[in-house]
Length: 235
Ligand SMILES: Nc1ncnc2c1ncn2[C@@H]1O[C@H](COP(=O)(O)OP(=O)(O)OP(=O)(O)O)[C@@H](O)[C@H]1O
Image (tube, rainbow, N blue to C red; front, side):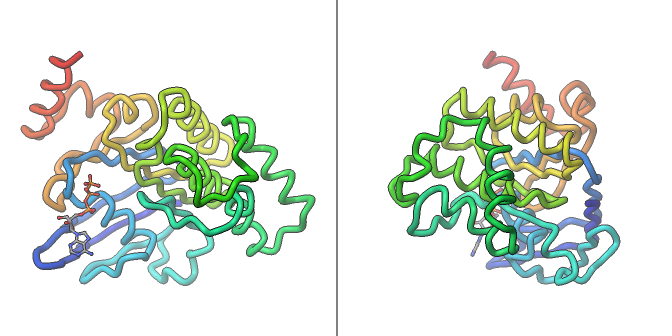
């Protein structure tokens, strides 16, 4: 699903999002990087219509009416809302809601189970660790197989192995289902491993947006240059 954004403004006490034009390409993985408070989550949540924008337009495959496309979009939020039931029930709830029968649900779950050691599936999801909770939250949206998947720091609480498996899962979803994926991350290496395109945000604006290789080898913006130079020195 293609996303085209025009004149997007979001204000609280001050303006936190101010995007003149942004095109998120269909079928690609786009990583959003940026410092704390730069507007990454707000952008993702405006796209998912969780937050109301103050001004501007967002087109989904050319359609501006969110109601017509809402069933094509899934979002994993930074602080996912976990229901007081088993981990497995949390994961299958969306599929049940969509009216899938038990056989189709089991088939769908089997497809995604191989990525992690899910020995906590029958535990109450409220009692899971941070990393386990993140896996439930991610699988819950992955199994829906919607054309647009928005992921807000999905691996922030995961160990290295789980992070790499999550990246494999994200790549597989993108390749097999041609899903458009937008992922917010603080991990430059993750963006390097995963993304086709990279966006860098600062103070609510997109200050750099390019193909991944171009972003890392030849950034245009001074702040981005400085950050990439510093991360090189820390290697
Ligand atoms: N409900 C709210 N009320 C007031 N200000 C808010 C609200 N939600 C977000 N903000 C402010 O909007 C700005 C952008 O926040 P946002 O969460 O989008 O940043 P972010 O880039 O995702 O940050 P981080 O990397 O820390 O997750 C911040 O200054 C934040 O304090």
